[in-house]
Image 1 (spheres, rainbow, N blue to C red):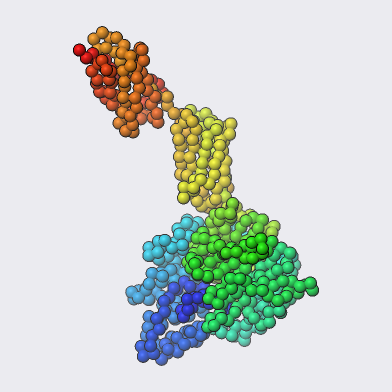
Image 2 (cartoon, rainbow, N blue to C red):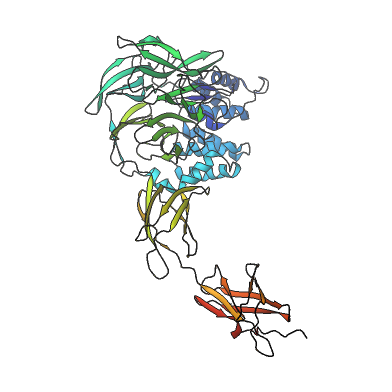
Length: 616
């Protein structure tokens, strides 16, 4: 599995060798070097071994030191994590927290360790403590969005069936990629170390590329395909174009005082062998680029990098070629995919528009987990943990799926070392919920032609529907999301409903009732107070106390007037100030209050005296 060395001695990510480096970035330990006069002899030796990535040797010196400095303690925690001694690392960081010497990031580290130990509920509590210090963290956003689905993540839902593969050796196999009818993977099976998985990152055997066939679900007929690279160490996953004439791969390159990963391309020669390599334009001595995945046309590539400007750790990027065949600027896939942690091993399923990747930054079971992100209309909808059994408390990564969406492979060190596993997809991925229903009015009659709009939690419209003759409607929206539905039709009151989709696909019913607007009118007749003569041309000013609106009407030859009341529902209260004026009469102001019982005309003369006295 990829080791991400967030070196305490450099700013840069140092991709180097293959054991458990993922926790380096989780520690977020800032280093201050102590003079030899301030620390003991064994801590000095431990620090020296630590600087050379000899974590097992460093542990032996640190453990003999007795009292360690704060930095020495943090180094020892990192050594324990590199060597998969999670219980010891957990005890030490818990003591650090208890002694009041912790930093907020230590809460996240401790949460990760507890996940690796399978203590998920306790891990959640410590993560929530971390979240109080970093509420705007991408990790926190992902956690809060998906924690309600924890049971679906942590329990086998019957979607996958794992197949153990017999080709795995006593060494390491990882990063299987599809190459037409064949597969390509990385392995160091040629040279098995005399002491397996020694806890030092020096002198490890180079990973080599193998091509193989799939026979009855097993990997067979393996043969080396990377001899043109000499003894350089390959890093896992590779990518191919559809015609299998171009291969993208990453390898370790020594630059100045650190080792980085760089991407290269190889062209297949006429003799069927891979020719010389061409470097990727974004290769740098200051950061790593790796895990290339080419789309079929060879003009689009996904890859992972810790280049400046990302969200933290390694991010996944997409890059495309222009018409001249030159790579354009890379595009970071954004906060739905990338977090402060590490996102790696991208694989894009072109026919289904699904991006698979591995991450230690999203809500997971421990270490790296596999995720799938559905992409619709160029928009990434969500990053969804694929759950047990493809994920575990160990590092699970490099998930791929065949074109028919039946068989797939992934890599994992769940048994203590990196192997490739096969799996069967028993149930297809489904990332949307179908919402259907009917619209009726308050009398139970179906209403056609209702304009319905669905808004997401950012108040952006994501769907528009018009009800049919039977008042029916249907639309699809992503799972695990919050929405707002509005329904409008002339002559009806506006309708609004908040709803959320479940974590499981399927059909959901959402019936809607909209009410016809009441036809409410105010009417009256203005007359002479003495003679009873009907007054033509009187001005009626009506002020609504509730809505603070003012309207004006006039009487006709019969001295009558009408006023249309809007936006009122049954049991609403009418409350108006009514001012009556005429040039030949004394003005008067009245107050009218009434309760709406239904549609109809409300005659003011029944409650009010609308007559005016003539000016003499």
